[in-house]
Image (tube, rainbow, N blue to C red; front, side, top):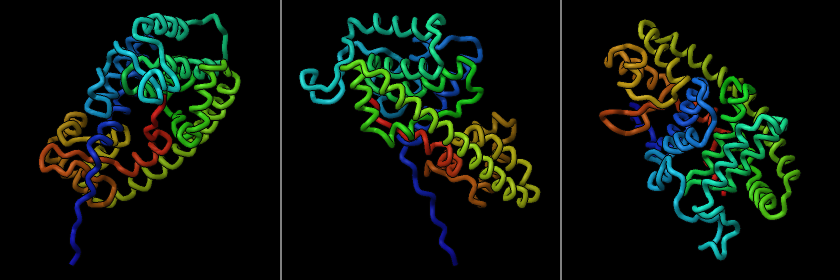
Length: 298
C-alpha cells in the first residue's frame, strides 16, 4: 500500500512575489499596448502591484519615498552610496522621465536601456523594490520601442551570477563616470539573456508537448483538463473560481480537471488549504523563472 504525501507547502511570500512579478509585467504590457507611455505614473502602478502582500508591502507601495535612504552601511554617514534626498527626488525623476521620452539622442536602444537602468537604480525612488522595478523597466522599455513582442528577455540570472561585478560597476558609474565599462557589462548580459530566452522557449515547448500527451490519455476528462492546462500556460498560479470564470466552466468541472492534472503530475496544490486552494504549474514556473530569481539590487 502506498501512502500519499501532501505536496510541500510553498512559502506564501515566495508565491506572492512570483505572482506579483507576473501581474506587474502583464499590467505594464497592457498599459503600453493601450497607448499609455512608459512614465513615472506607470512605474508607480507597477511598484504597487509588485509589493502587494509581498516583500516590502509595508514600504508605501506605489509611492515615491519621502525620506532619505541609502545603500550599504547602517546610516548615510557610512553608506557606500546615498541616493538623492527626498527634496531633490522629483527633480531627478522628472529628468529621468524626459530621457525616457527623448527621441533626439539617437542612441542605440540597448545602450539606452543600460543608461535607463543605472539611472533608475541610482535615483532609488522607492523605499523598497527598486531592484524588481529596475529589472522590469528593461523589458518594458524594449517592449515600448517595439523590439520585443513578448516579455521574453530576463537579465536577472546574469546579474545574479555576476553580482559583485554588477555592484562594482554601478558604483563606479556613480563615483567615476565609468559608463563604458558598465555598458560593456550590460550588453554582455543582454546577449546572455537573449540566448537563455531562446533555450527557455525550447524547454517550455517540450514541457507543454509532453504534458499534452499525458492529458490526452485521460479519456473523457481530457477536454476540460486541456483547457485548464492551456490557461495555466499563461497563468501558472490559479485558483478554482478564477479559472472557472476565465474559462466559463463550472466550479465542479474545473475542480475535477485540476484533480486530474494533479494526479498525473502536471499541477501541484501549493497552498495547503481546504478552501480557496492555489494550484501551480510548478515545472513551468521552474523553467521560466531560472533567469528571474529575486536579486537584491542597490
